[in-house]
View 1 (cartoon, rainbow, N blue to C red):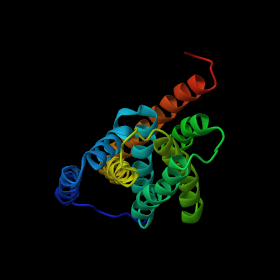
View 2: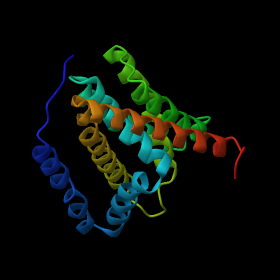
View 3: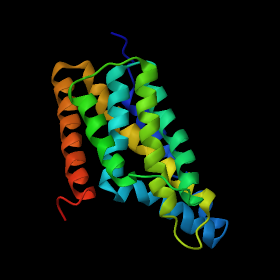
Length: 203
């Protein structure tokens, strides 16, 4: 089994190094500042988005090289395209239900340690990324800079993927692998909750 051994100190350093990127944009104008802050906070304050993005990191770590990098890179890149569609107001059906389904599907992949070909995993992640990005783009605040907003949610998404990877590297240990699969099951349950809410079964 092809595993990538990550030095936690290196990953944490990368995580904290990315955080100062957000304030750097805040000095270029109120629209940029508002856009960057709103974009950065959006994935962090939406549990349906948060769990799916952590799941991408978990699944990538579980699959090993090269998926541990391919999946977390694919998601924010494709998500930015979805965000542009949302900003432009182009119609896209079933956004909220599919976002919920993404949590169910990605959580299930992790919970059962499903190992499809890389292109299948990347395609699945990419499809879900479009809908997550679209939802972000549709919620662009008035007077906010759209590019800064996109940068913000891409940075936040990357940090959530890194969080998933940090947890996911535990798969190298027997007990750790069980923890990762349990995280996947929990994410799947959160996805079910949001799907029931999206279709109006629960309030």
